[in-house]
Amino acid sequence: MNKYLANIDSHSHALVLGGSGGIGSEIARALVANGIKKLTITYSGNQAKAEEVANKLKASGAEVYVAHVSERTDETEDDFKRMLEDAVLALGEEITLLVDSIGISPNTDLRDQTLNTGVSADGKKIPGWNEVYAVNVFGSFISTRAVLERMREKNIKGSVVLITSTNGINSWAAYSMHYDSSKAAMAMQILGFASEYAKYGIRVNGIAPGWINTGMNDSLPNGEYESECAKIWLGRFAEPSEVATVVVFLAGSGASYITGQNIMVDGGYRG
Image 1 (cartoon, one colour):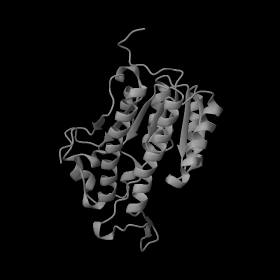
Image 2: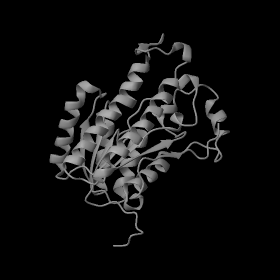
Image 3: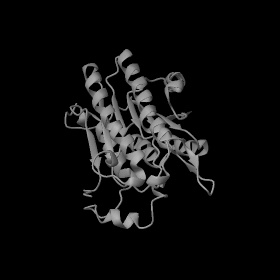
């Protein structure tokens, strides 16, 4: 075996939470393109989109299991564990890689932010702080711990990658204060999980994307795209594939001595 290869074990079973989303679906495609043969992807709302992504992955030669995962809090932890068992039974392989790309990023004027989710004057949902944390922090904690515990119990020397954000590190805005602080909380989860599970041979890392071309930016204030590009050394937003390739690296043997990191993929953002 060539120790310099960074390949992913083709016998791996990857679980991509949010695998039907803009970044998640690209991660799933990148994993399959780099040797993953068994893949579970989840969705929370758009089943048709998830099935579309799954069919394309199957056409590339992968076995794919599609599962619904609702907004996860303590009350749904048992449901999530049942989903893990169903996925393993469906594909006949224990999960060796978790990628959590689930997240919501409401852009709401600071004066309009509330604790509880509300509705705007034109009838649009406005996620409050409680919902942002339920999805981005509490859900991430519950799902990651469940997968890590399963890996530990099954003696799986696996890898976990959480998708955080540079908004939890070196960029922020008043209109995304709830999102920014939730991603900073996720960065602390990476450190806690990585330190606890390293002794079991399990690596836990994060990827902190900067600005990425996805639908999460649809509600940006006017002029924000141009002003933010001016702060990025590469002068543009990234494509989801540029995040996915870093996931592939962290999942492979080339990253065997990397854990507890939250790698920024931001094009040289300096706000």
